[in-house]
Length: 256
Ligand SMILES: *Cc1c(COP(=O)(O)O)cnc(C)c1O
Image (tube, rainbow, N blue to C red; front, top):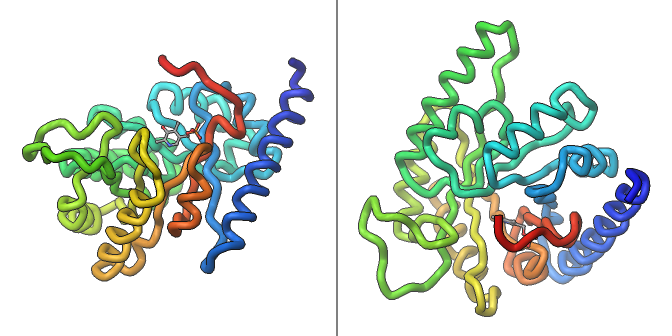
């Protein structure tokens, strides 16, 4: 496919997704949800094409891939305008790299990661200052919530479910940790709908957790939920940010 054909394809897919979003948003009150296009697995050229088509926010789930694309686009018009959202499970040792390009991390799910991101922000601001660069804005942090209703709750420190995420009981403690860390700003909550069930009740639970969180932190109003398959359900529930990949970029290999 030529570059022009690919841009045309992306334009069409994007228009279809935007139409779906508008139709779903027309059924509810509140501001229009924001679209984050998930570009994982696709090349930097696609990210640049999306930026030229007016996409401002892109999502990635692996640091190595994301940092490479961000570096590739750094001195281009796309690089200037894009905001990178990190949406995948994140290891502490990647925090220093992620804060160099990420506007937001949607997958904060444990206090040790909050500590690592806070420290990484200090190091990053020092690096910028030493290089005579302006300081970066605070890193927007969303708490990823595990919406799987399992009978067993993991012990403290035990690995989260297969799709990641904190247990709902942990939200307040994590929110306080983000709020008190310098360099981090509490954005709200993020979740992936559990596999193989109706997403609507899960998204409703997420909205309940969000309402509770906003009682303590009124500005933490972001609710990042909804993907290609379930964006309508997420919008109906009240999602503020959608993360849509395959319906814009096309199918990706199931495993990698
Ligand atoms: C890949 C991914 C998405 C996008 O999923 P699609 O089904 O391709 O729209 C959204 N959120 C997360 C956390 C992802 O890893």
